[in-house]
Image (cartoon, rainbow, N blue to C red; front, side, top):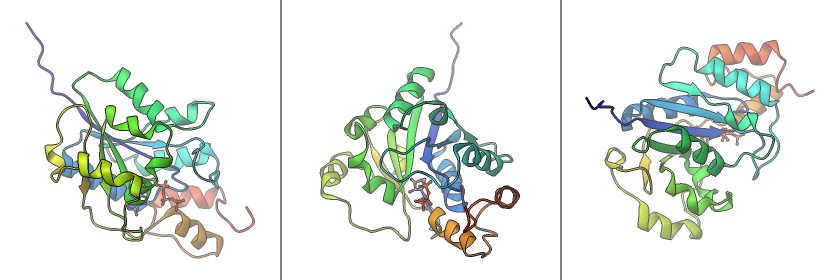
Amino acid sequence: MSSTRTPRRIGILGGTFDPVHIGHLRGALEVAEMVGLAEVRLVPNFRPPHREAPNSSAQDRLAMVRLAVQDLPSLTVDARELERDKPSYTIDTLESLRDELADDDQIFLIMGWDAFCGLPNWHRWDELLDYCHILVMQRPDADSEAPEALRDLLAARSVHDPQALAGSGGQIAFVWQAPLGVSATRIRQFLASGQSVRFLVPDAVLAYINAHGLYRASN
Ligand code: ATP
């Protein structure tokens, strides 16, 4: 008797998460519901190759992401990039995920518009779509123009309806989740100047920040 198994649709949201905030969490949840993803994995970066070192340790960032998703069955944490002793390359993460998943499972790489615009600086960026589809979330505080290097890609690979993305990869769709003008940079600035970040991060994350004295001006 042949077993019938439904292909899984898995979202990947990589980031520094320094700290994780409602922009990441609402975005991940809304995209999961809109596109019908079984799971969105939040993947904290160890040492992002194209940006400055994170402000808090990998251990603290991972702990905060775990606290943030603890009551959310559709959001999970994937710590594989923190376990590698080398820069975090998304292409490596996608390759290792592809090895673990069934051939007909779909991977959706989720990123904000600002991250998408920086794609041409990523290691082997032109191979990413061999492994996944890309879902781009709007960010109200981001520049609106796509860089030149991405225009041809967008023209060739964009589809209008994110729910229509078929096959194991190769296409790009935009998802119009409720825009939240929040960033980790802003949250770190609030904390450094002694202001409240209540409601910008989950209460459990705020409790962790306070208990560990993170992002204070003296750190
Ligand atoms: P920082 O301010 O330190 O650069 P950040 O708030 O942009 O941090 P990251 O961890 O760098 O957070 O972001 C991880 C991913 O989440 C990126 O793809 C980013 O574009 C996306 N993202 C972050 N904040 C939002 C937001 N408010 N709305 C939509 N996407 C977001």
